[in-house]
Image (cartoon, rainbow, N blue to C red; front, top):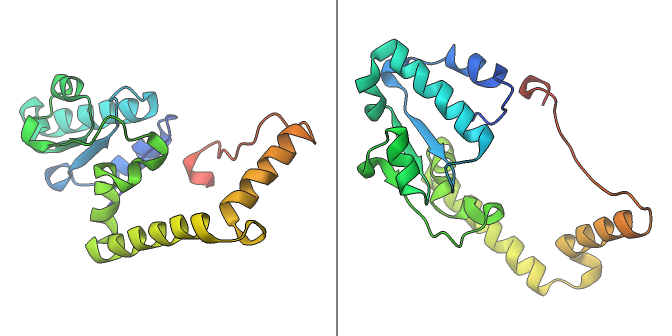
Length: 166
């Protein structure tokens, strides 16, 4: 079973750690820079969990990373044969299509991940080929522009306070 933890407040990872068996768990730390505060806070908590339950030497057997920051991954204690790299020019918004998508692919399976990629390709084609009045990415962009520049709404955010509220 796959679990995804992203909330920095600690409740999400605490709840998740109660559900897992440390002996059979693999943590995949996915961070381009290996400095993202939410990711690294949760990774440190997971690392402490494994070290407390199984000993410090077990950490290297229960962690893998997807990152471009090989030095930071090594400093965390993840061995080089457990690092999945990707190009440093891949932006965060698009990284799911790179090796960063590994945890998702494991969770949904390679066939479904292939369908996911096919859907992304279809949306790329839609953006490139659809008339403006039917072009969803363009319409969303225009709505954002209108909200910011005509209605003077300076920001847009959808943020659950706690993961359990999502």
